[in-house]
Length: 173
Image (tube, rainbow, N blue to C red; front, side, top):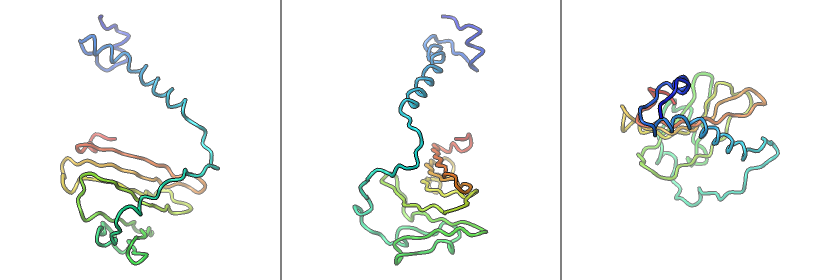
């Protein structure tokens, strides 16, 4: 099967192999099928729904005081200990934010965070929970981000997730 000019016009390159050409020409069909499948399961956004009942996992793990497990990452004065050091409040002032990081290195595991978002006008604020291997692998690290992007009043927060492998930050998301 020879590729036609029509196929070449829609793709930046066409391999010589018939099998690869077939995969390339069916890619739009696959994407359309995935989009239709996702749309079939979509429901309209309703604000009167409450989250489903879940099992609280924090009680299943041993309690470790904050200062035993974490250290200030930047602007330490904005990391305020509460509940006898069992948790912290991160303060956002007009000059800077705040952050903390784990003292230990983890290669795998169960990670969670309970995050309370700032109320009211929060345009320009980014609340992030992320895991990165940049301190161990500075030139080719991996990273998983969960970022909540601030908003104007009466608007929803936006969740953005990023996954970088082998320092793919140079080439984008």
